[in-house]
Image (cartoon, rainbow, N blue to C red):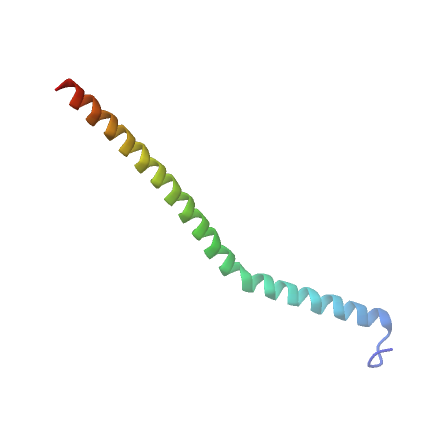
Length: 71
């Protein structure tokens, strides 16, 4: 007996307090998780933009080569 409580009461108290601590930590990390999601999303968009810029530059170089060959 711990603090005059039977063993099953101690187990229940520990389980409830552990669950409360777990929920607190989960809520504490939620904003950080959101910011990491936004960072990943921004990096993905940045990659798409870079690929599009490369495609545009490639197409521009083809057009300039074609126009210089026609002259």
